[in-house]
Image (cartoon, rainbow, N blue to C red; front, top):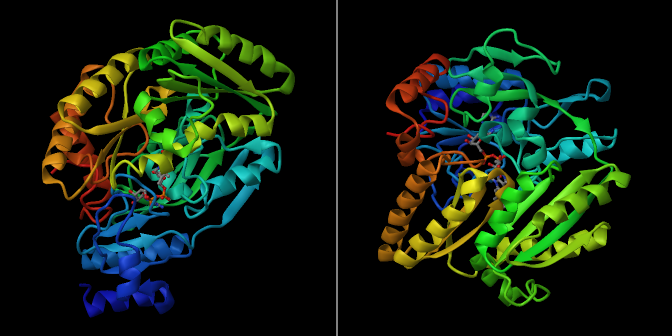
Length: 460
Ligand SMILES: Cc1cc2nc3c(=O)[nH]c(=O)nc-3n(C[C@H](O)[C@H](O)[C@H](O)COP(=O)(O)OP(=O)(O)OC[C@H]3O[C@@H](n4cnc5c(N)ncnc54)[C@H](O)[C@@H]3O)c2cc1C
């Protein structure tokens, strides 16, 4: 537990009303989306950049680990407290500091909810493209730390592509500013890109300057049913090999379709549907028919069963029913979802999904795969019973086999969820010792006492 001296120092730095060490608060902040539970020694609620500077200095003096936290929606244990650490919750830092439509930018504190940024931008005819599925409640600080992304990444890119500059505090309490307010700038090393995706291990982010784009006028959607995973994934390659870039290209495999059948959400899919693609285009209203026609042409091929388009809000909502029902439906298969988010080159997706099938059969596991096929980013969900030791052992064998196959195919371990605590053991499979040494040296430079998000990202 925290010493009385350290607790008093945090209280004097932030004000007593911003420092909680009672059992109820510690229990509330003991978890993210992973099933693990580690209570922090206390929870701090800074309200400004200066508060963060002050609390890091106290932590540094008393050598207390700090676990930064947005909404705790991460899937890899990134915001899971390490034993003996203190959670720094950014919930109370949610001011929009500047909104500048003339320069297409917005400056926000880390606790601002992601969708709020998009909502504000749209009020001036602009938009903020990164659209993680958790956008209604996750915080921009968490998105920055994980380099979050969503379906629109295929056309617009990921969080990192929309960050012009950052303000933050390193592990030794140094205040830093990176990047600039302009869309061009090459002065010095690109520390902005380094901090985005660093999972809270290099600096606590206290402010972000984000780039905005003109909002597309309208969206149109295609729902495309196929007789096999391979037929759908071959179609993905054809879509990526023509000149209209969709703003979403999402895939569901046969097990995902089986999972939604009991909910009724698959009732209007043609018989024999074993894979589904959701394809969207956006842009000027008069250009959408042209884009949709080009996409339809590329989607036609062996195994195509049905293709429906929607141009109105109601039709689009209806077409997304099957996909949107999936998250709830998979929860009926087993109590625990081991949720991987690997990436392979788009042209290797079909082979990789075959490999998932073989692995699932060999290890007798229920595995449901879906995801952002246009980026080659698949959510491979191993549905397991945590009390079944034998099944859990088989799941771990399957996981390692999947990770190795991803790398053989030229892919990467994580497309958007990050490493956190859950994937640390796989990191040496992808990153060689010399490169890992450089990363450790960078960590040492930013955080000499190892206080920022201990136990994350790096393998033991
Ligand atoms: C239903 C659901 C759907 C999801 N869909 C997607 C998706 O489509 N795409 C996607 O990318 N992710 C998705 N996620 C995962 C998760 O929502 C994202 O990783 C998100 O970016 C986490 O934001 P958060 O505010 O919850 O951060 P947290 O989970 O609280 O923290 C995430 C990481 O950020 C660090 N951190 C938080 N704030 C700061 C800060 N100010 N400075 C430094 N480090 C900080 C934390 O220490 C932790 O390592 C989904 C999760 C759920 C539950």
